[in-house]
Image (tube, rainbow, N blue to C red; front, top):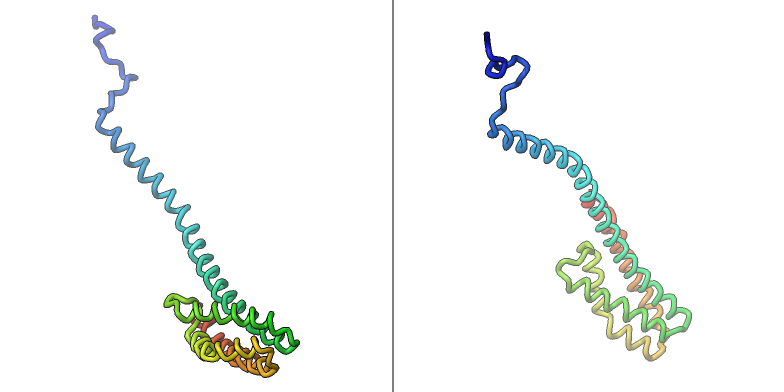
Length: 163
């Protein structure tokens, strides 16, 4: 007769050694990391492309604000509102000086060159506006036209470099 207590039954499974637990945890961690990366990578790529689009829009808006301020100054001077025109021209020249002096300015080089040319006329234009001189309207219109021309010349280059 055999003792039932000492006879191992075939239904009992052998106990696994404890050393396989860290391996299993490592495998789970690697699978979890892979799933995380699969979900994170497309979002990161999309965020990166959206950031590039945002930066391009900021550059365009900055240039348009400059143009708008200069155009407003020219229009106000033509209407004879010299004090308001002087304030608008002063805002334009201040922003233009910041963009020209800033090495990391978002504006393309042709626009920066046009701003440098406009800045050379700053003091004379502000003085004409302060004296309520009608010649200031024509001078501002000329600066505006030159700036618009530089923007138009640099627009195809900026679009091509953004792609």
